[in-house]
Length: 199
Image 1 (cartoon, helix red, strand yellow):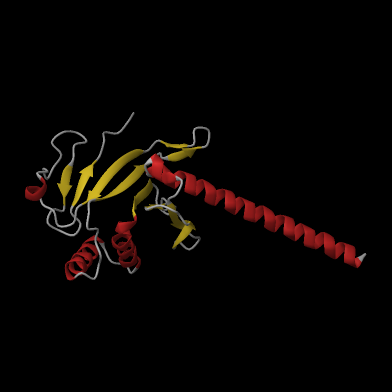
Image 2 (cartoon, rainbow, N blue to C red):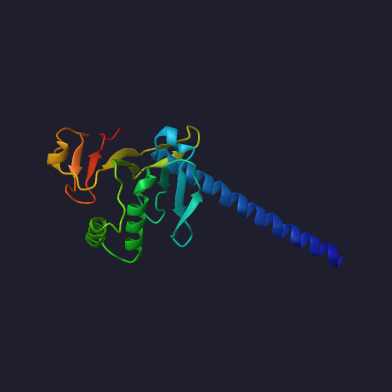
């Protein structure tokens, strides 16, 4: 009788544990499905996906097979914002995350990465490299359509140390959603393309 009770107790524990694992797995899968929506469709299946653990630290949710890395929306923030970018941007991105985790503000992060990029200790891409951002306060995953609804896309093409003169780009958009160069002449120089928000 004692053994029977022990077996039943163990079975109950294993059932609860199994249910928790399935729930975690299901939750992780949904985070991955939501996050990769920021990437071009052709890049989604093989993308590496980074997310957040219970302590807010960045962890790898899925190891990918192509050149795209996606970062899940930070659950501690109200606005949805998932990003996908080429792997050559990872040193720049990872360094920024590290400095922010140390409590440094935007300008400090900018200045440190600028100095490191100029010194060659922070490797920046040698070619134009794209970041895709899917963002919006109402952004959420629709399991029926398998898409994120209530969000908009923005494109950022990093061209380190480029200027308005070297690219012919304006420093402000000429038309709604038109391309322009931000932070020209710095390590963080990039082309901004923000299509008008859809209704």
